[in-house]
Image (cartoon, rainbow, N blue to C red; front, side, top):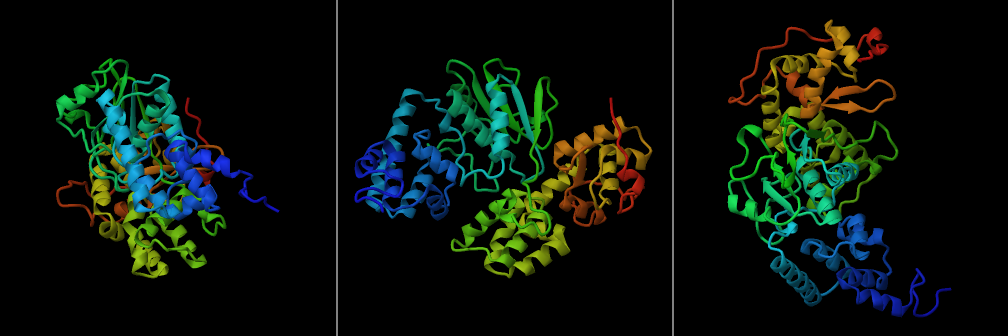
Length: 457
């Protein structure tokens, strides 16, 4: 039996009251406890991630984004007047910090919507590499794969861990609603020389994040990566090929295999469900809905922009109808749901080196996974030569690793396969592409190829 004045966690009234006096995180925790909610329950009600809530309540996030606070206070039933006081205190604190240091990192970082899903390991890896002193990292990947969002989270992690000044340059609107305007209402677009230089004028090393970087058209007024006063984190469709550069390819979000009973644990399913709830806040997946969501995540290669593009269809069509539409003609479905992704994919294919593009045409006929050794045997070419071209396709995100024990294996993205096998019918008029491939690899891999294991020195 629970004692009067104590909650289910054994915390007394005085202890709960002390939480309420411990800043915004303490107030949120006190209200949550008074309502008998766990962190997981409040996260589900508010759509704020459990990790975000945990960091806020523990006091590790001292200046949360106002949108996060609003979602939490709304779920807790806190009045608009109380919310206004909370928001005012946050804005006052932000203004005070900016007055002390006008190049505050948070002033130029973009605003994001919701927690990052399925990229936590990437954030930890890249932030630790930067904290260890690495000067240049380029995040590459397929259009809509989440390069921009990953860069934002990495920059935030570095800033939180070491107090590093972070400067954001460029960037449009990402698939999750990200913009290039920070919480203070500022932005640092290309060509704003004074804003960038002012932000880099403090003591110590700063982190410069260039979103959508192209070495041939580096943003005006932004120092080059060789500048000694900062580290550089860029996003690009392919590596910049600069000395000392480390590249990190953003892979598709993990999606469940066919008939996987634990489909809800996969990041792609979690993200698509979150997107559906943007259009249908009360959405709760039935067994049939879950099967359709899993199939869509597989068909769309766990691409965040494609998942967002298809999410609103759940408010108008039966899930099975959406699956039939997407799987029957994925290229047409993407053209409707996310035309920018399809256009970007065609541009990537068109700008590949000729031999790499020809390899992509050839391997797009493979229905299953393959290794570099398999392809070298089928083409009769040296493994090193094939491996160089496979590396280029991997950096561009046109293929992705297929997790299996032993020799590394790969697959071509479903959308890319559809594009390559469609005889260029969907290519934009302004994209110049070659004719049909000279060689078609059989759709089923030969038995000998499945046993091939090639060791490259």
